[in-house]
Image (cartoon, rainbow, N blue to C red; front, side):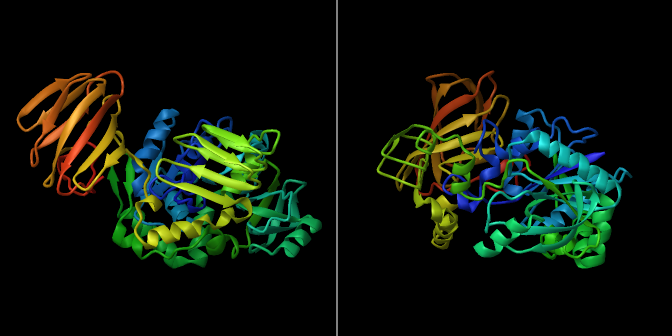
Length: 473
């Protein structure tokens, strides 16, 4: 049995302003109609003896991931919530330990949630070869056949052949090289890009981790044993997990084990680590431009132009990236696209919300989008999914006006419970317990006008919440 382990802990800062920590790139539609994590799961279709996936993610993303899996009819065997990131090695250890709870010793297929793979058949073929090598107690990594002297990836050097043309022992892992060294690797022919994808028996990975980093193994085991089950989620014990060493699979296990094997694969792979990478994989026009959304170009070449919410036009641009969202615009040279993370660092340093959240915020019941605001008022557009409802709550510092523009709302306001339809409105006084529900058959859309002395999202006192939230979101 093969259990996919999908690692979804990244923040994707190099793809700001589209990717932000509350909704990073793996939860966005970047190269197809599916989000990147949906693409990761659906490309597994057709692999034999495949079990439901384990997904490891940030607590903040739990409801979004659960909803995105529901949208594509994927049942997960577990969604493991990390209270904070500890890199990939502990995440996989906890997944391996969880996978053995039924008494089986499955083979784990470890995949980052944010990769693009153009050749699905080549990927499936490599997974089959990896499965057979894992049955022989090998810890398999997938090495991407390089087509350029790339300096942004680590490399794997293959040595002796285990299966003709398919599986090789690993001689060594090497860090990201300079251009001359990368060209030498390309010329030599037995170096491959480190994809960050792995395949091994759960027991073998745990055995090697225990041998080379017992502290991490023990802490991972304690974190899972002390975890709580929250709805469909496994919530790791924060105090225990905080003590766990942070390290990648490569450093913690693969560079130390004598059982490492590499499978070279040419599968049109890209880790979409920057806007220039999206330009590389996108469908370009006759001038080498890749566009998204409402875009008009004049005398523009070899550029990536993305519009999220309005018309974007360019004149006389070459080799640039332009990305527009509702609350931020990025303009950068493609050669400098990796440096976008420095902008995010500056924004975080001065506590700018644009580094963390989008203008449109997603919640387990739907979403809200800020339309206008000033010191004593805030206007939101709220969408409530069919059958969903917000928590029973009150606010100490604000009153709210609700106007239904589509659908049917069931409103609780104090002791009153009543229905509202399109073009109807109501008033929620400051300090009054209230709740909003969608009892109709279409999404509920309404405009909310908040008024008061403080309009922050933390002015929420919850009395009942079907989603078990203890935070203020």
